[in-house]
Length: 209
Image (tube, rainbow, N blue to C red; front, side, top):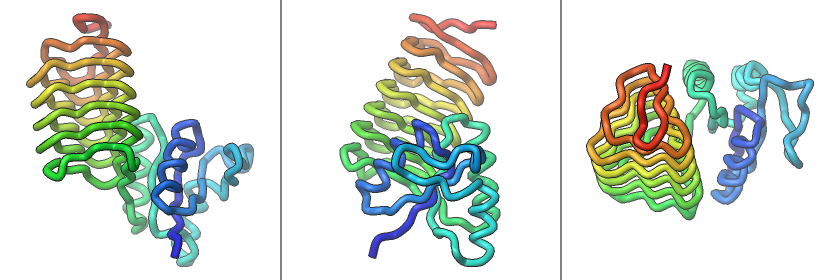
């Protein structure tokens, strides 16, 4: 029997998550706070807002499984916490072409995209995005609600704090620590530790005001 998955967030990011979900055998239903102004995303209908989904759950009519397809780390955190408070089952989605070590840990609500690699003893937190072809090497720690963008390469033992954003094509040297709520610009090379709440970019990456 096919299970239904509620996807909160109908954007380009949501399209890719829907594709992964269908590859894994789910039927998808979209919910987005732009409804009813926005009623469709490609061929998928948008069934209502996040509040509508929660109201359905209170009548036992909603899908029990949910994933949040929102790229903004803060908003994704808020939606995940709201859905958890309303007893939804937050699932983890992993694209069939991703390579995940048997010794890696991937927490609930995280989505791992096509071609990504998560190697031995890496730990991925709640509600993360490990985007297309990203490499998370052995012993890395990715804290909750962080977005690792496409083609990022994290060498062994890297730690990334919560709600950070590692821009497309960036590279981070082994054993580097990037703090909470940081943004690393696209194509950066990080060879020194990065403190909390900063923007850094360049090759090598430097802090920016």
